[in-house]
Length: 573
Ligand code: FES
Ligand code: MG
View 1 (cartoon, protein in one colour):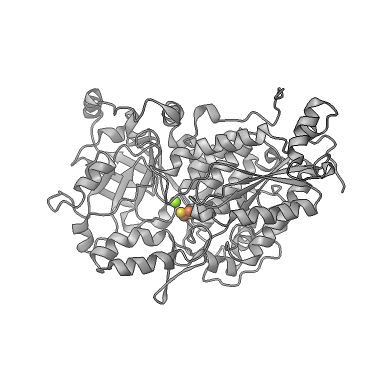
View 2 (cartoon, protein in one colour; view 1 turned 90 degrees about the vertical axis):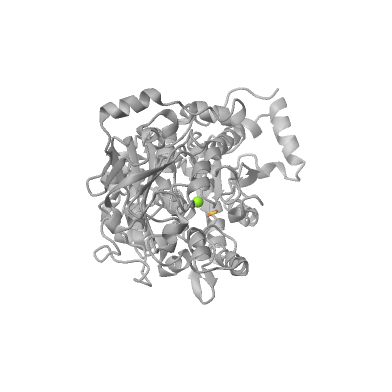
């Protein structure tokens, strides 16, 4: 085995001929390892987000074993460790409340242990950014093994997307008279294999982001969870991380400003989730790379949509993989991307050279895209002084310029209590305003921005309305939904001052979101505004509330921005 890196970090633990060397080795050897297995070899930490409470990551237990084989083959020594796992479909009130907590777990677990390189096993939405954020703050050589999407959902002869179908349920119940049996059948059909959501929702977006940033092997992100090639990729990633340690290819060498710019361009081309914005800014913050909300518009909004996947289009991740996956997209974007180094030591341009598109109905050519100028639009105006975002590819073109009367809900409880009231004064032109669903307001900035339309309007055939909030929306969702309004209402942003009947103007082309109320009137309302009571006085949530930043800063905790490196002083005895 050739090794260029003379001083392995793990040598500090296992190399000494003294009391501490004895202690560190002796207890590890109770697992039955010969001492030369880990002495002088790169020790690879396999950071596993497997959990039975995160069904999307349910197969990662097995994947860790596969990664270990690769590590051993390449002359490394693998040690798997569990970290907090965030299961999108189960955790309350929202996984986003815990992304930063999970990142702390990852960061401290890596730093405190004798690890030379890291493999991140990820899948469900937040398990990717949380682990990457934590790893960034330590900055060891790190590779991501994305768990992969589920197979396409198949239901009664048609396709159904895990995630995107959820948003039709109220419509299905009310308009199409879906019965309980219909739902029970659809449930398992939508999620019929291991893996994460099979649309270009947040999980697929995050896997794509990891690959676009250069953190995976080429082509890793789109492979379905149950495809044999996913296992091959996991094994090869195990081999590769050992080489990365030997080459000292740390995260800071991969995650340059250019790599983040690449991720923004790629996200636009695949019609990725708005959640990417928050996570990418948070990751950049950990690396000390400057990245602003405006960068997403400047770099991404002129990029066409090349991928015809739900929720912006009609296909699912399996089709995308068979069409050639991200390698084809990267090839189309070749001239738009920086030549950065990726996990295998090569640039995207080198890696995608041989990519072939096998289905242009799923991945288009750059010159004949599914939609021109797809990326994310960053809005400004008196309703969102620090910004708000909208995903034009998932919105209704006719509503992108709209003036309507506000119908205000002060919380999700208020929304649930009144939205279906037949006497609610609302019509298709109204603008639904949802307050107090931001980082501090909910807390945790849940994916509620795409609230269902009122039942009476659904029955009239209304399909979309402008909705505005300081929350997020699921990457699988769609609609003319303005999200991430900052400053959020819970800290007194102007969103908190909107009243029923105020006129709101949305003009996506001119990037404007305006509350048509005079500054004098706004000041009057501000003087009378009473801030909501804090959600709790103790525990992690208290720390979160005291330290969480606004959406445009990535909603990280201010105390977590940046990194502390991999050095750790002091020993246990
Ligand atoms: Fe886990 Fe969608 S719920 S990826
Ligand atoms: Mg989600």
